[in-house]
Length: 121
Image (tube, rainbow, N blue to C red):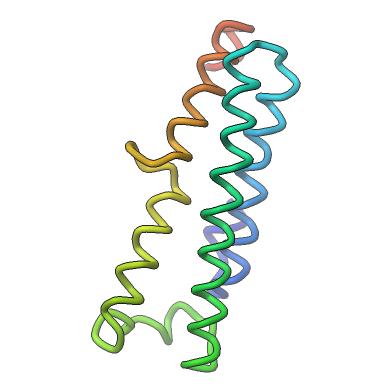
């Protein structure tokens, strides 16, 4: 919820990272094999996706001197290749099906489901 109210791109990436690490923590403390494998995969996928997002945000700041999302609204027209790379990393960050983050979080959910089906609702 904290990431939804932000307009600074770097803060959005940081708050979403906190959300992903909460899933990883759940996977580690549940104690199920699937959840632990999911937590381990989540650590690796989060490292790649967050590093890529922070790199792109830093690169955009060097070029445009702003991290405000409202000022970067015309990013597709200004640099289409950068916006395409940003879009692919954002899909990974929101755990879109088919990405590595999605697979790791599904392992965590499956392990958590076997641990306690009632807590999943």
